[in-house]
Length: 277
Image (cartoon, rainbow, N blue to C red):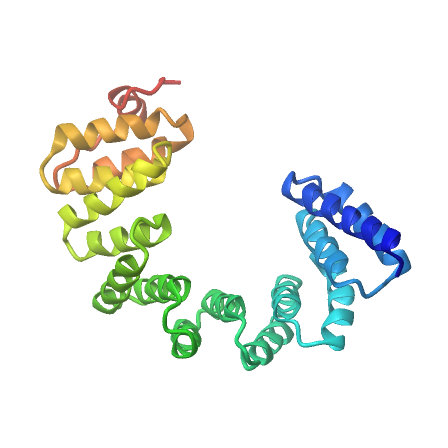
């Protein structure tokens, strides 16, 4: 390939990636398709095409081009996306088999462990999903991403003490990471440590002040600590995020041992500062 062709290809790939980022999936598909007309096995173009097709709910069409790339080389990213799309397209057995082959490759490609665990979890195989993440951590024990996934899966399987241990280690390794703090806070609520949970959620809100879901978790902590005024103020702040959050706010208020319950949802809306319909 000449220098001019290489430059043109790089520019086209950059445009395709930009179209994906701006969610112009049809444009990204066209750009990737033009590249693939001259080279059916251009890895980067195939990845752009696959993500563009997924964005248009046409995941099944991405399988064949991904399979072509996967047959040519050991590419963890391609194989992981292929496995995910096989599962998404109703071929879960094939997708899980592909992901099992990918996690066996070395060096390990960590997203493949996460994808396989996620698919197993969806299938109700929580124990096996946990084992997959643990096998990844045995290879890369410093991975905070895998620790968060393990904590989340342990939470789902009601192993709260183990989840708390894992997520505390993850928090200490990556202070301030919102995903770690949110998952840790959720487990702390279930463990009854509302003070520590509130602290975790406050740290997240310092970075993401408009996150209504996290503010609702903070409200839960405040109400359970008996700080009714502060908790209800937090729920009013949640409501300012939009009327679609009324259900979440009303549930938090009603479920708390120090909350309030309204038989009439319009009264709950009025109390929380929303507009009654």
